[in-house]
Structures are given as C-alpha cells and as structure tokens.
Image 1 (cartoon, rainbow, N blue to C red):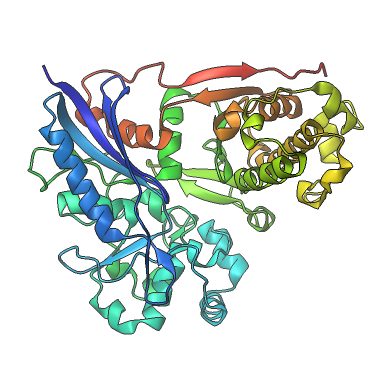
Image 2: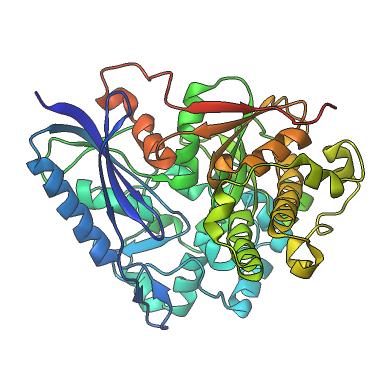
Length: 459
C-alpha cells in the first residue's frame, strides 16, 4: 500500500531540497541539489532559474515513478526578496536579480524623496532601508533603468510564487512574501503602499492567494493540490504557531539570528528600524515583529581565526562545554542581564580583540560566545519588551551550542529557554500550512522536540 505524502520543495540560496513528509510529518524521502550560479547582464551572480525549473520537474518525475508514495499535495518554501518577472505565459523575461546586488544611490534618493523620506516609508512598510533586499526597490529599478523590460512584464512574482506557478500555471502573490521587508506593504493601511499605486506597479502584481489554500496542478497532471508557496522565515514559524498557544519568541539561528515574536503587534518605531527590526506577515496576514543580528556569520569567521591562531580544528568547538569559571572572569556583576544593560550595543566586540590576549583557545571561544549572547540579548529585547512572553525557543545551529544556550538561560532568568529540534522547519511549515487539504490525521503533538536550559547560576 502506498504511503500518502506531501512533496515540499525547500529552496535556499545554496541548497535546493525536495522532502516527502508522511501524514505524521516524518521525512520519508529527501533529495538535495546544488546549481552553479549564472550571471546577469551586469556580470553579477544570480540564481539559474532554468536549472531550478528543470530540477523541480525532474524531482517530481522521480518520486512519481516511486511506487512507495502517493503524493497528495505539493508546496514550496524559498528564500525571499527575489522577484521573477514573467510574461502572460508565465515565462521569465529577465534574470532572477540577486538581492545582494548594489543599489544605485541616485535612484534610491529619487524614490525616498518622492514618497516622504526614508523614515516615513520605513515606518509605514516595516522595512529598514536595505537597497536590493527590499524587493519592491528591485521592481522600481526595473521601471526606471529598463523601461522596455518593464513594459513587457505581465506580473512580478516572488520566488515562492514563481515556483508554484510552474506547477499550477496560475500566477499569484502571497502575503508572507509581500510582507517581508519589501517596501510594498503598508502595515498601517493593511494594503499596498501608495507608491505601488502611483508608479503603476499594482497592475503588475498578481492577486493575493491565501497561504493556507490550494490550487490544482497542471504539471505533471491535474491530480495534485498545490500551495501558493511561502517565504522561508514565515514558513519556519508555522509549526510553532500551530503547536504553542502561550506567547513565545522563536529565535531562528543560522547565518542570521532572527528573533520572531508573533505576539508583538506594536507598530515599529524609528529607533527599532534603525536597529534592524522589521515586521513579517504570517500566512494568516498577522504582523510578526522581528529583530536580527549577523551572529552565525560572525561565529563562522571568528572560529576559523581562533582555530588558526591556536592551531586547533574548527570542529572542536561544536562540542565545547560551558566552563562557568571562565565566564565569571568576563562578568563584573552577578547578574548577566544587569551587566549587559549597562552597556551600549557596540561595547562588546570579539572582532576587536587580539587573540594574544587569551591564555588558550577555550578562553577565546568562551569570550566569542559571551559577546554573541550580548548581541543576542540586545536584539531579542527589541521584540520582547512590553509583551507577556514566557518562553524562547531556539532552533538552528546555536541550539546545539551548550555555551550559547546556557548563557541565554542566564541572561533571561525569568523566561524558559528551550533548544528546539525539528527536522527541516521551513519545509515542515509549508506542509503544515495546507494540512487540512491533504492530511487525514490531526496535527501531531510531537513535531517539535524541546530541551529546557536552566541558568547555571542562581539569581
């Protein structure tokens, strides 16, 4: 008898994965691909859309040939801030421009001067000024730098919705993509921002389709219920929102460490935007306040520096245990939060330290994590204050770091701090979003494994 499954394409910048989840949300099949990036007309690297499209078709054919599985539905979770410009047949007209592409200062000035200035636009769209990372700015750039291309565009689709369109033949927008630092969405009006109408972009943005609804596929046949696709950061939160009703923060750790608070609907302030806060929209169109720090990247770079200087292997630090005696050397006060509260955001920087200041690599590594937890505390506080959050769930790389987790429990003594483990959170979120359409069972209660960390010192 065939196993009923949902197929989820989880498309990151580096790895493109296909997962099959059974009705208990266990992964029963996994396939990973990596593609060589191509270049746009300016010579900047960008995603190879054709390779991506063909890979989806090849992968689907492969699992359809497998007699073990009965595919009930298909959905997509992909990185955001990337637009695919298509003609009336859904065929791409331009490269998938990289969201890290340099943005021309003159055009940026023209935009913000036209619509009331950086602060006004940023506050109403919950989008820090990020250049190409604001996908709306990419579209604005096309209008002014490539008017011939702009005229040919039927629709601009965010990447998750483009991926869905190649299966369904239908072109839609999705609120999780529109509502994530795009400059498109006015959080106060709960509608597209005035500039989207004024510039005529509204006619080239397809209708919004609910993230928890489905369409019918046209490829490889009409049998498959297909979701509209979700922005990966919003997708990763879905299993938590469905599993826990008491207020919590999800600290999603990777290259970026993002604190997501679905229970904070206070409007973003100018001060919060200046500190890189933003708002996401959930698949149910609810605002999620978020703050972020670039800690995963810093950790990766600085661990290499420590290993090189002390002639050790970077893998050693994956299992380093907390030595409280070392931490106490860096802590002039008993309470970690009290000490951190006396400091300004930029006061503790590992990158400023000479490694010759440390007696050994363990002391250096402990201090690195100490400074990263300081940054994390400052960042998480931005979305935590004035809310009734009593739990922090940490997923991703730092959830496995014993020093990081223990220090986090120390700095938030009144909040339960958990390491959360879930196989492929973004992919699972895309599956859970359309659960009611494909799954005959109730949502399982054991989707997320939790390990409580208690402060190693008494406060």
